[in-house]
Length: 364
Image (tube, rainbow, N blue to C red; front, side, top):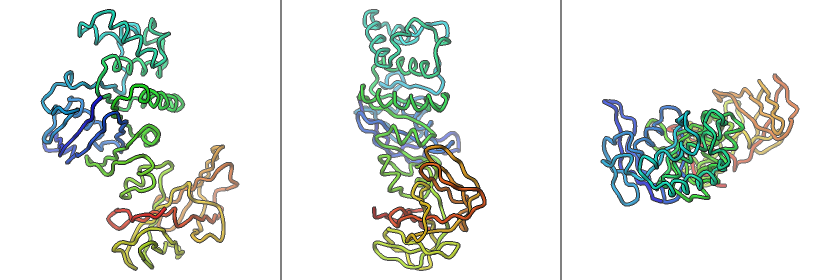
């Protein structure tokens, strides 16, 4: 096992800057997930750690070694890609053993390593089969097994579940979590799916435009995002954002006026904010409740309803919310398109963001 440390790392392709001043410490044995929208630089960052892309400037250490000029094969890493990249003419055993055979590892050791990895991944009964006889999830396990047998210090995963259907992705998330628990090896995992990030990670790195926006444990990012971008990216359904204006501010509470004239109290520290400042109110869909007479309440109009069985999602029009307001209620709520709805939420469930997108400190 090994830690990974990036200090002031930059990466450019000609005149295009892709990674900008990346400073990050991945702890020994940690499961860290890089997440962000398409084009944010997460896969490029992973490839620089792997040595598949050169760093333009800065320092990269794996363990105690600076590896800027070390070849990928000598970095002590193993990488699993989105595509399984299995040899179709070889059975599973040979696919997993091929790299070891090239390295002239003794046959007896190869046998032990391959069968041990296959047992860990629960594919030991499939070793005689060829890839075409396997499901997508089984093929991905073979690709992971091929990495395991190399006994790397660091595992790198580049969107390994994106080719799988929804139900299999859920199952494979569980398998990844079990694998990390069993191997206790440092793992760095790239995904665009924030649900994968929330369920797998010890810590999450949120990237945007080649920069790190925030690093933290899943619940830390969910409860205390540093800015509006992180707040909107972490959590599903996405957080609601409503334009507002401060009417009163103190050390432990801020009151804001919304577009319909309603006043909302937020349990946040005002900092340097004052009455008249333009801000954005954030409320997560799961924190909205159907009720009247709440301390904080808004009146909206339902435009669309999704009945999901275990929950109901209502999409509503509301002044100052450019993308509308989404509410998530437990069970089968009785709602219809075009109907008015009154929703309440607690002051402790409010997020507040300044005009530059920075979050006010919450009290929860």
